[in-house]
Image (cartoon, rainbow, N blue to C red; front, side):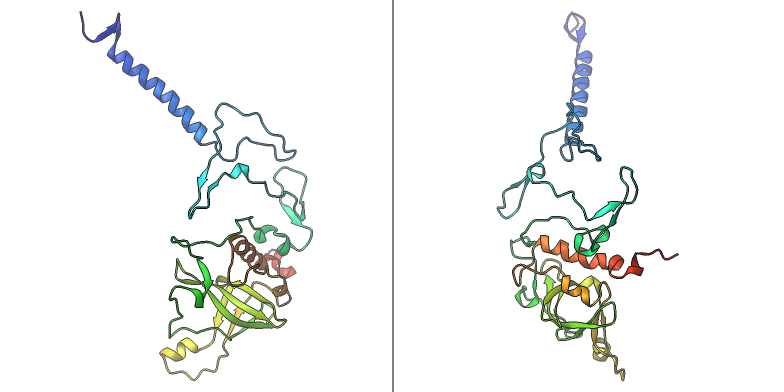
Length: 268
């Protein structure tokens, strides 16, 4: 008897091929399910009708959050409100929306935000990541760099809107994230450092002799002076949540398109 046969004419080679075939089909089935655990079941954009669930749709995906914050399952979170302050430019699926109100406050276009969690971004050891510089872990402004606190702030329409009262730093990345500004009306707002331009000769004077009398100020050309009053405010002084960060970043980012009427017009 040939020992290569298992039963009758069924040999080891046929068994290996059969096992591989079953494994390959199971692998394809598994990968298709894993690729459809978020964003499924599908729904139609125009009427919201849920499409039938197929055998290839996977289970809900769960994320274990750090620092003992439990488990996050995206599908179990209430969906965002789909009502937007705009109208579609033309009747077709996927047509762009044209703002019908204040696009910067309504979160349209480049001013759009996401409803992130209402707790601060944290460092690896659980401390608030973005804080005023005095509350940071030994972060300071270098001696050769402008200190900025007390400097006037100029807006896109070349008006002085207030002064810098504090600097907020990222304790994980060791960089400036926001400038805290007290406006001429007494309101305190945060402005992203990425939209600020520092003018003056403090740094040059520290390195080289200079006779320049260039004034020292911070220019924020993203928004106008009047629009500083509508910058999203912090709920808790000295603490910024991810939810608040997204709205502040979106407000200033949207200003580059919506702050003045001419910015929304084509260049050519």
